[in-house]
Length: 126
Image (cartoon, rainbow, N blue to C red):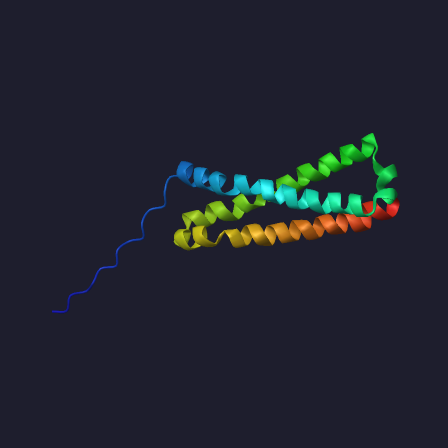
């Protein structure tokens, strides 16, 4: 008689509360770097093209900039839409070791969008 090794079932995922806490502990400290990157791009444009941007500093421009910053942070939250389901998957350990790639790709995309927005939508009209 051949003994069959029984496959052990995959461990149950941790409770949602633990997964959410892990996601917040990982993503929120990195939000500071994300915002610093986008602010550096914008400030670089202002500093290196200063005389051109002088007329852009108005109350309505500040309101638009605030809305854009809020939208950038809303887009940052998209990481949770990928992170949380992957933490429920069988690839949880693999994902947790490599989720910095998602941060890097998201930061590159946000930086490119910021650069485009300033170069094409703000700079020509100031």
